[in-house]
Length: 530
Image 1: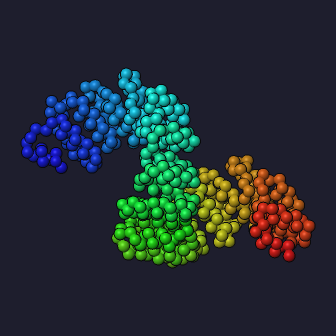
Image 2: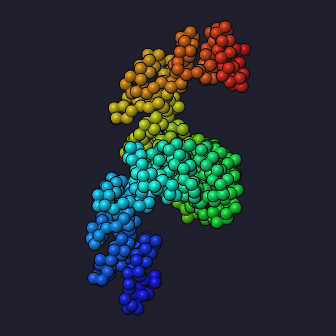
Image 3: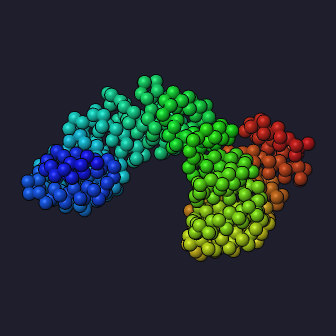
């Protein structure tokens, strides 16, 4: 560091040297070096009251997240300027102390200091996590100050509205900004992505290219993630072509990992493998993305082979990797391999991880090892609704339907509320076992006690039960009165019952309805009427 060389020569350092050195500490994350320089400045009476040095110190501590020290330096300044206040406020906003940031803004105004563009850009970061009224108030203030068309402030406004879920408002602000930048476009795209509006994110990505704005690494990551989320392989290929034009992006591991994940999620594991094979370096994310892709598309054997190759490298699996490998074991019924993975997980102290624990329970249940599944379940410190659902469904799958009712009661006693999926499992169990009274009790409790609104699937369970009991007229009445259009599944239950009871006329009516829904699938349903 040049600062050290100057210091060792015995040359007296001036304010500019100290300011540059403090900024360098921020750039490289040298916290202790920054503190050491601060101590030297403090020992020099000529520099103690230098406002520019003081502001730089506030900025340094704030960026390091050392907000108490930033505040201490701030309070010792001979006087505070907009730069001083903005540096402190930015630190509070950056590290999630939103109330303190807002309080800072109010105190700044009371002190007669007007916020500038940077101040507003910083405070908007905090406002993205507050209520909508505060967002509107600040936006109005920015308009009155004439800052709304500024690119930095505009980007911050788009980000704030995106975080608040007000994407229409974010787009409105975006469209009013006369100039654009990659940061502004990326802010809007990431907002759409965050709120699962992947199609609009990709439309924006395409528009950005049409306007001649070159994406940065974050834009590419957002685009690839959006493609993977909705299985847009063609769009993903277009982004890949765009990436190939800027060779330095292809050398960045996060981009390569996102490409692997995109191809894997879009059902193209061969392309994912190609990208993976061409990587000069691979990390745990690279391996996990590839393994996950194989599992998602039912290539369990390839997933486990990939996991075995990973174990032969210096790259250790993380919790997410183990989850994928356990899912592969469950799909293949590979109990022995699953047990080996369980041993590895236990040795690494990961057994109590909720996601891993859930995956172990699911794997054992899929492999028919009910006792082992329950052992893992009991050891988990936290049991959420998803874990209870997995255990209950596993017992049903393994023909242990009688136990599920006691598990359901136990789930409620332990303070967990049954959800949509829980009732789906329970009602389906009642339907298949012909438990009419139990079904009615559960259906009523679902609505009256647990506040779960009956869905199309829940009504299908009722139709299926009535069909199994030979109550065709009542089943058809339910199908006609429920607030959903009966789908092919419901029609199949009704047609099967019509065939069993010889109700040809009723069956013909049901078949006609099925034809209106889906001619292709209805043709398959013709078999019960033959």
